[in-house]
Length: 76
Ligand SMILES: [Zn+2]
Image (tube, rainbow, N blue to C red; front, top):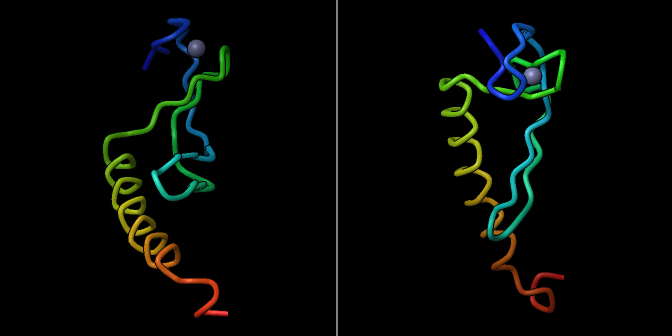
């Protein structure tokens, strides 16, 4: 597999930290399996990994919206 950015044949299996900004929150997912270019650092996720991230983000959005619905004066 060649790197899409620098076109070097230096993609290796690695782990990466995925960061996403959602309307209501930020999400950080650590230790996501990926292919990383040792030359330029470009990270590529497999389609199956992206699917799992999507599912995680949907779950997190539901949790976050629940938290945000809480009224401080009533909840505290
Ligand atoms: Zn590269």
